[in-house]
Length: 182
Image 1 (cartoon, rainbow, N blue to C red):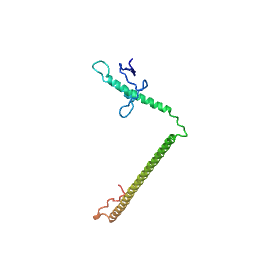
Image 2: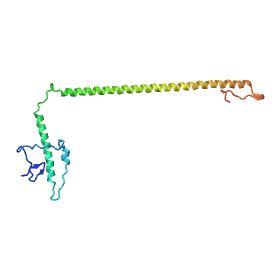
Image 3: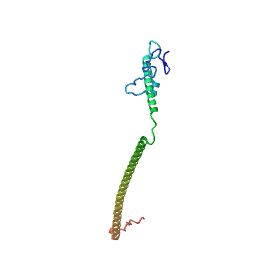
Image 4: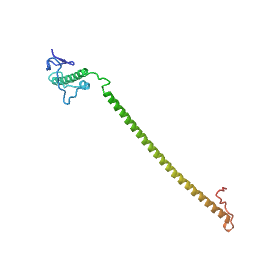
């Protein structure tokens, strides 16, 4: 009877089993990477024109890869089952993982502190710059106010002088006081 591989009959194509009935030891393709479930699911075979169906050589080659992958996974599982369970006292891996996690947290805290310190420094520099700029503007405005007040006083003095001198050639003096509006 032909051997059946995952629903694919081989129509008399036999796969030699070098260990006499046990699972074959097959080589994985170049790179030794096992097949993924997606590769099995998405495998497409070319159809042949002579008869309906798939190219048997391609199907056999693909099934050989499936067998090799399955064999590798089963061997690895069997090897893992034979290893003794690590004891918590003798296993350094959790300690190393914990140490690495603590180191990562410490580094993250240091980076966060540096970022915060840098942000504070920038904020303080921006505040100093704003205060300095505001101070310069205030001084400039106060200087302009002083100049305008001095000009106003000067104009009032001149107006008073003109008023005190009286109108030229006997005309009545116009109302020239800056504060008067009539």
